[in-house]
Image (cartoon, rainbow, N blue to C red; front, side, top):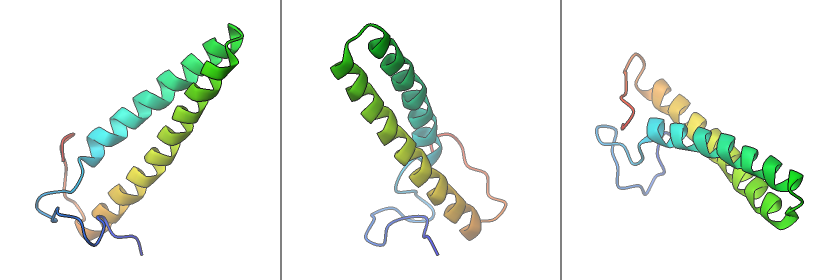
Length: 87
């Protein structure tokens, strides 16, 4: 079972370790923009920049998966609780 926060984290259930909803929004924005920039860089034949943007987009995908797993764990621990963007 996945926990909502790492064991040695300084956060608690009342005060989250990370603003998961905000982190989710920022990761989604990063994924979209870096994918767009990678496509534009490859079309402009600037391969090194396209590769860098594609790698950053891949990091955003990994972050999206991690955040979604933590949000699901938080939902299991606190069913019915609503969280703002900054919680």
